[in-house]
Length: 303
Image (cartoon, rainbow, N blue to C red; front, side, top):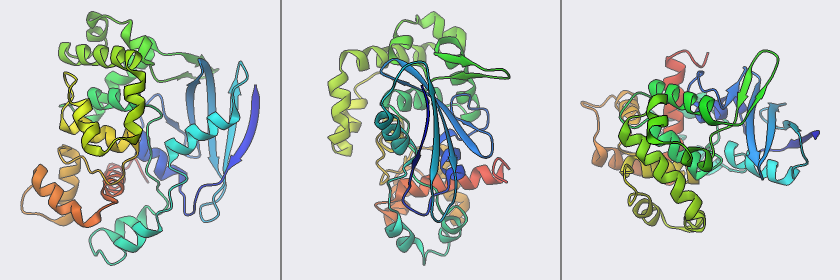
């Protein structure tokens, strides 16, 4: 099945900024960006679907989606997934109003105007991303996660590259701890990933119900799993459930970003981070993404 169709984000929308906030590093081998097009392999009802997204305009944005799959897949399902991942339905006018007189934050908001809050397509993907990056650098975590995709995932071989889908729970559940350790995960993380994969398969309705649970309930539910703490749970709230009021307060990189943005005397701890970000409620998570983009800009990932 090959087809094309358009989606119309709420303006303003900037595909590049949104995709970079989603993928975080150029070495991410699942979410691909070539400077103009976002490419992603999705698995929808066990069908591998290649999706390529391009943007026409920023102020009157239109996204052109090119779809390629071996079997018929619902266009509505694909559209719904991309709408969620790229946050295209968010109207952020209240956020722009909230920050317009913020002398320290507003320059970032202006610089990256059009970024929408991205979201991983599944809770499992959010959890794996979080566990992969626990207590190590983002670069190191994504390197190991890339190896996980290369080891397990459905893929498409093209002329000059291989496209990888993100590993599914059943694929991770079939791995042994030894398999995951060979990829680069610690024993502890390997056990956590297997546990989560099995739990999501066995408790699908419980995980699905998190969409409608309060933040505190989500955190309590996730933290009952070995290897899941407050940072991971808040990361999943933001990146897995789209709770843009959530700023992961234990995030070392985010703490450093606040320290630099606000010229603080010392790096803020969890409590201080919560105090600082309270003034941006209910958009603290969106600030998190702006700070991330600024760091990418500083690293010259953004030109």
